[in-house]
Image (cartoon, rainbow over all chains, first blue to last red; front, top):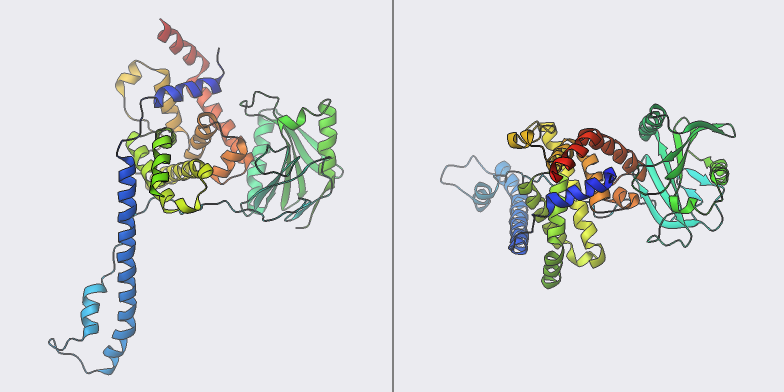
Length: 250
Length: 167
């Protein structure tokens, strides 16, 4: 019997096989693009004219006697024709963020914002990849420091507003009787073999480590990296070394 | 520029339309999502590396789908958890329809994770990047979504429908 994941893939393929892009899609896209540019140009002209009305019209109002109906200035003309604000555009597309925020250049990866990495497994170096979501940030490590190659270790740091999600996830593991509470030195943590079943591998050994009341770290070894170790004990020992080497600067 | 973009659309539009459909569950909205995403892509075409064009469009599509679904949920215009009424389907359940209904019933972000992970075969890190979240969130969302799909489909249901289909 196929796995659930295989079944989902097959069903998605069945469901979408009848869909094909419309032949005039490109034409519509280009037309829409030109229309948007035209609207943007009109809006810019309206905005600049409206701005000039504010500057020009204000002295007129204050420095002249009350105008009669026939006593209209050029500024008044502009005001009456352009001061009516355009209705706001209806745009249900989320704000554009073309690139995710990163932590910048982390160098050798031994300092990830508020966490110092005292020990890195042999050969691993910062991959050049990171994400910065404010209270949650992450950096990955691999052998060649090339962001296009597969990660071997990933470090997440969760702080303040991101702590609840970590608490929820650990509770979920507890509820499902996966993983175990552990201590690393004098710090508490939770060790689990995180696995959503799609890798066809054993999963990702993951150690959550409480760094302080405002900060948790999450160390993940990739399933590929784990294969280098002779067994679970060795994996665990290496995870512990990384965890023991983490210090908070928060 | 227009020629390059046209070649990209010709090559990838159908694939992207399917992503959009799986992400939102509605054909008309999928077409609109795709067109909107492509317009935005075209605006930035000179700054987008051709190798990254498809991930870029995909990212716009799934994030727009999530945003729209959430907005609808907030405005309560369309109940999020009510699949379209299809009496015929209810009488004659088909596994594909069961899956699509189950997909539609997922929270938008979980649905996006499933589509990106299992339809697009993106890695957890790539999915995280597309959705602007951590790989840990991708894992937990995928896990929750799979549990719901498993429950919605049910191994008994799966087996039953497969048996019917082969009968």
